[in-house]
Image 1: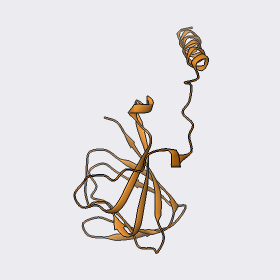
Image 2: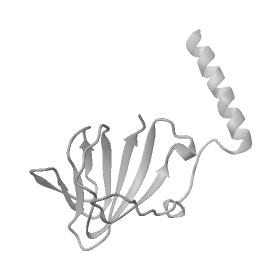
Image 3: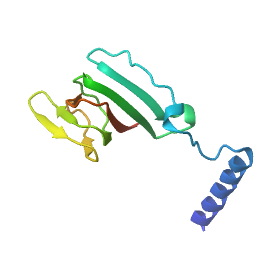
Image 4: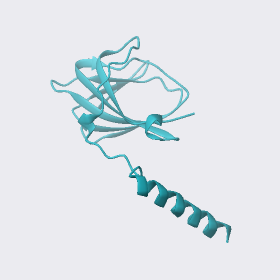
Length: 135
C-alpha cells in the first residue's frame, strides 16, 4: 500500500510539472555553451555541461568533452567515478604507468581514485560523453 501511495504522489508531482512545461529538458547539444575549463594540465579541451544541477539533476551530471588533435585532459584522480562513452574519434587513456587505446563506440569506466587522462591521438576532434555523480 505504501508503494502505491508513493506512486500516486509521484504522478501528481509529474502532472503539476507537465502543466507548466518543465517535465523534461530537451535541447540540441550545440545549444549548450561550450566552455573552456580553467584547470591546470588541460590542452585544447572544451566541455558542454549537457545536464547538471542547474537543470535540476540531483544525482548525476552529463558532460560532453571536445578535445582537439593532440589535446588532452589533465592527468588526475578524484574520489568519484566516471562513465564515459566515445562518440567520435579515438585516442588513448593514460594512468601513471600505462596507455590504452580507445575508439568510437567504446565505453570506459574510471573507478574513483584511479589516475586517468584522455588524449586525442587522431587528426579530428575527439568527442566523449562523461557522466559523474554529485556527492
